[in-house]
Image (cartoon, rainbow, N blue to C red; front, side):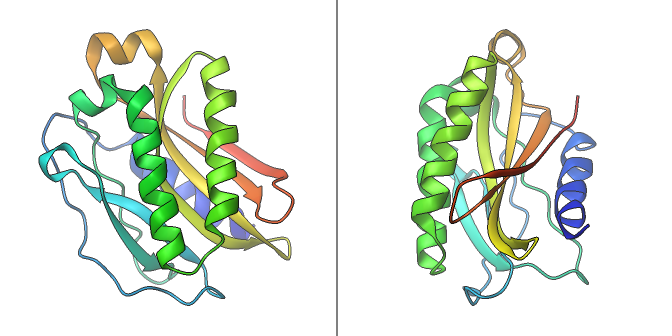
Length: 177
């Protein structure tokens, strides 16, 4: 049930947001959270076409900010930007003293699976949390069919994957259509 509380707000916020070419900023930087708390690292803005990270502790009593719209130029170059976005997420996790090595492996696994499915994807957030008594990463991605991204330049869909941090076992997956 706790996992649904994490995944559903992300899915709803992203699926119902609007998209465009403007760079957006959603929130100011927050202090690094304790590694024993739920911690979310996410892409918060795209100044000058580069993703900037914010690390924040997850609190149930505050609205969860949505990741910003991905600029068209970045969406169309998703193949090279997947590595850039992943590096920013892993770096932010490392700075927050989280298991960044497992996050890096998970991001690699996700990319391999999604590319085989014919999808263009960009990771936009990673949430370190407890799922059924185990630490897990819940990774949020923006996605679209590859040909649609090239034609329209937007990534209007979202997916969330949850993997345990120790065994990298897939424990949940959600997507909007």
